[in-house]
Amino acid sequence: MPLLEVTNLHVKLQTHRGPAYAVRDVSFTLDRGETLGLVGESGCGKSMTVMALMGLLPENAEVTGSIKFDGQELTTQSDAQMCEIRGDRIGMIFQEPMTALNPVHSVGRQVAEPLRLHRGMSPRDAHKEAIALLDRVGIPDAARRIDAYPHQFSGGQRQRITIAMALACGPQLLIADEPTTALDVTIQRQILDLIRDLVAERGMGLMLISHDLGVIAQNVSRMLVMYGGSVVESGATRDVFARKTHPYTLGLFSARPGLRSQEKGQRLMTIAGSVPELVDLPAGCPFAGRCTFTAPECQTTVPPAIEITPGHMARCLRLDAVCESIAKAAT
Image (cartoon, rainbow, N blue to C red):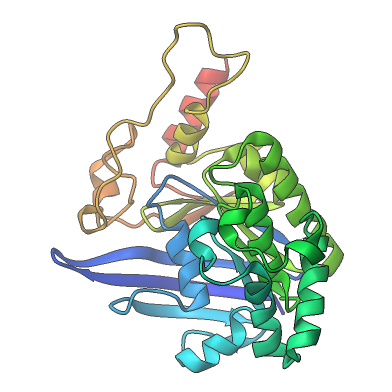
């Protein structure tokens, strides 16, 4: 049985312009010890998908479909029941540590809180364990600094503290939402190495959300490419990178600057148009209109998932034309 099984997940939001689907028919599984990446532009549905898993959606959100965690259906859980799961069996590293941490409480109190709530530890034992956790994630002189406040730490150290909080209760699933945002490349590497080591050490499942294809390539075994709330391509990371097929995936990769391939003065490739608002997405393929292969049926027909290679899927009605174009470009 998979650790996490998401089936036909839809998230509908009520806006002043009418209903909008932020997540559209998303399905995937995640096993224990497996790593899964979610990639795509801002607003493509990555964070909304994991917020649905965590039960942290806006009050006006309507969820349909199934989210099973360790065999337990999460979509029917009450807020109180989800509070027992969040921070205990599912841990999350949020995108911006300065907003994830409470500025008026010491970091030690915040790391110790899930231990007291979920493990019933005494204040003394939780304090001792919090020091061990901060030391494990690389906070220098943790015993002395445990009573310091978030603003007294650097950006990289604050991110390490949020990791300590997420790991406090030894969760089965760790969700990392853009965990290296606004960090310099050296600190990024340290944070990602730390997450990878801890996942391997504890046998957790990992969901890593990023818009950085390099981060995805180096840190996850499987990936989902999302656009307009839908998964447009998925598979083993090496397969998607080696044989990217969906027009949106091709556009993402083409827009990456290269150290060698980019000539001086040459403009970067871009994807035509801009991401539409959720209420303006086509009824069919969400990428219709921005895609150079758009045909009339793309606007109205939802493309089925087509297997490119075993386990590698793409949703496109014009895959034959796309593959022909890729073959021509290669010759």
